[in-house]
Length: 417
Ligand code: SF4
Image 1: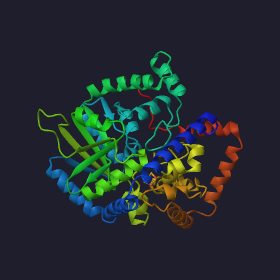
Image 2: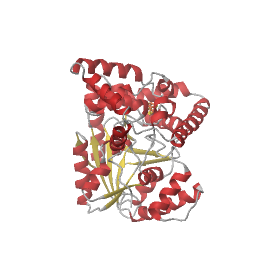
Image 3: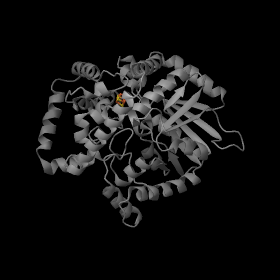
């Protein structure tokens, strides 16, 4: 659908140019832009250069605040922990926030297998599920959908009256989400940043779904990837500003929610907190010399400049939530080698991603280094055989269509009821 439908392609271009225009305008109006980027890079590198030390200090601070902390080496372990905590809380229904780590570990699928309904509270994520299509952009999950497509999906699933008024459509979905929120007992929440010196968890968003969850859910399961720490509040301030400027084209995020400990009785907020710290190959990535790829804060600026992403959308990146230029760098390191290796070729060397990235990630250098390493590891001809098979498939539409439908249907996307 994405490759063939001109309307969808047009919407990807439109999303890209609107996002790029607001980002460029916001950065141009930032007087300390260069110094700010330098502070943000320094904050990321400081953590990545000493992950074990920062992790130990964070765990100590968080335990002192009465929060249960567990570690998970991989996605399976993280999901086992999440599901067993949900069972302990007798949660048949739970809400989740918008966060790439939750998609990376495929928590929705793990919950579904265990008969637990995990519903995304972000309007865009909810509609992406309902329409079974995702832009792959980390901030604009439905930036590629037309009002007509959304209206049709709502009529089909909920039998609502026909309307093409975006406000009316949004309020129909929000009303349903609010009803779920009022019943919410448990939330699973990916953390944007954890501040080591204060044991503070920070959540950023543009529609307020994080503060809503933190006010109304009685039990919160926090999921943090080991690289998303920041040493102190000064580093946090730089990263929040950079994120808001590059993701939304605004000086600060519209909503900043933070949390340090469970709420005392009688006060709004979660009564229990349970933290899962997920590695999932990140220590390995750093040990192999690819740590710079983990500087990424998932602002999506590189996506909206990338000519390949604008042609293929988010569905060509092996079911990974990391798409666009950063996907071509992170996926080879996070996914199984045979799946990830081809991802480095989803690039036409335009170089626009490097100029858009506020954290100065060397996309080209990382891809080259990975290819060199891969060339030393693969059996002769393995990649050539894959390319020959791919060439054969794209010239055989009757074989290609079912194959493409199968590989692009994201297993983490069940339709919300
Ligand atoms: S690689 Fe850079 S531009 Fe792309 S999402 Fe990450 S931080 Fe943003």
